[in-house]
Length: 147
Image (cartoon, rainbow, N blue to C red; front, side):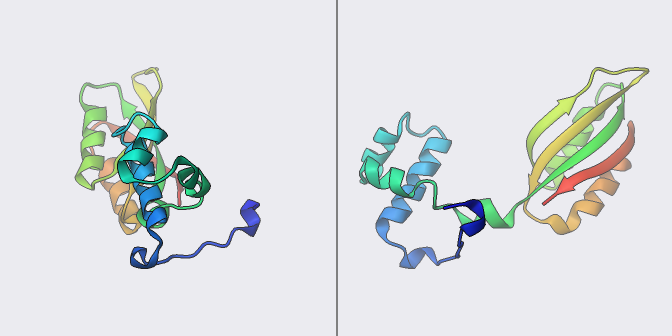
């Protein structure tokens, strides 16, 4: 099925067949390295590998796909000890989950940093950007993207 032709629905987990719920459990186990292989994970939860492979690309936990928002922020920071650590602390304070962080080598006393993070509540992104810009050593903050 093409991406344009997908029909997505949200369904209460209590009405789903057990095989779907077990497929979600196997996916979580593999993502968290609780099991080394899909075979082992399938054995642990009690489904066949063929059932897992049949459903694995079609089922997702709602929170992972719909409630969390991914943002990318560009920052220009002074080349001073603790500035990046302070930025990360601010992100931690709002329970942002950092996905990627790219930092350039400082030139003329400043470095660019691009941080992508997942945030459950997107309503506070402007407040977060303001808090980041108020940190000592932060020269510029720019929101590059947010979904």
